[in-house]
Amino acid sequence: MSKIIRIGTRDSELALWQATTVQQKLEAQGYDTILVPTKSMGDQVLDKPLYELGVTGIFTKTLDIALLKGDIDIAVHSMKDVPTQLPKGIVQVAVLERAITHDILVHKGSDFLNSDGPATIATGSLRRKAQWLNKYPKHKVVDLRGNVNTRLLKLIENDWQGAIFAQAGLERIKLLPKDAIQLDWMIPAPAQGAMLVVAKEEDDFTKEALAKLNHSETEIATTIEREFLRTLEGGCTAPIGALAQIKDQTVYFKGVVFSLDGTKKIDIKKEIKLSKAKDLGKTCANEVLQKRRRQIDARDQK
Image 1 (tube, rainbow, N blue to C red):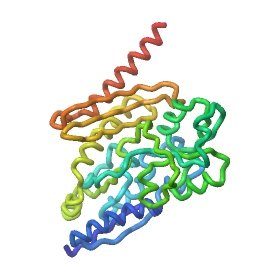
Image 2 (cartoon, rainbow, N blue to C red):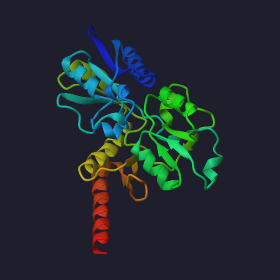
Image 3 (tube, helix red, strand yellow):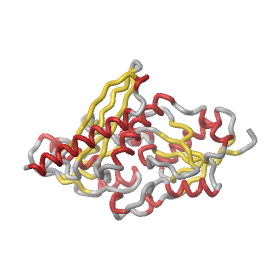
Image 4 (cartoon, rainbow, N blue to C red):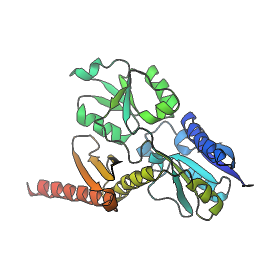
């Protein structure tokens, strides 16, 4: 164990918490480690919505390059930020046990939720925006960028009623307000709440070290969700949510695709034995695409 494992991470508080968690688990196994923080393009360009930047893996590309150049040995990511197709030469080596998957609303008073009046909610996620507008079509949704701390500060500084966050992120860095509202009706992003560690495909030492941290149930669930996302990415561009949960050797899956304005949605639910869940994500995605084609055909015939 003479090799020092260099852990690449974004330099935000949440990213450093995640990387430090991996570091502690590796050191508990007897490995020597060092953190190597860096700033991603997604952290630097904050004046445009993510979907306008047009860069796949905007939060991961900088670390991918560092990994392939040999400047770091592993990279730790929020799994929902990682493209479903990893760069050539980089492989998934561990998925840590998942935290809670819910989105939450941080607000300045929740009375507006029971009113028919206008309100403004902030989020940088097309998925959250579409689902919010589907439920609250009279509300306005504005773009919100930056790390968790920056987004919370922007909520305070602006005349918004609330902003949407991942519950896991705020819990991890102890910034979850006591009155935050859990949005249990909102389908999370594929792999939300999970942490992913990647390494170079040829690095057997590091892959062996990280394999000990892998949580198999989380790996299976997130694989199903990301397979759902990857299949839909080839057939449509739209806000997508997915969640697979495993209980008593059964997989419970729900997925959804919305129009950008939230007015239209196609959802799917499946319950299947874990032993028969291979390709579940792909199967569900193809069913969604078939439903979408039928809707288009029906409109064309009118």
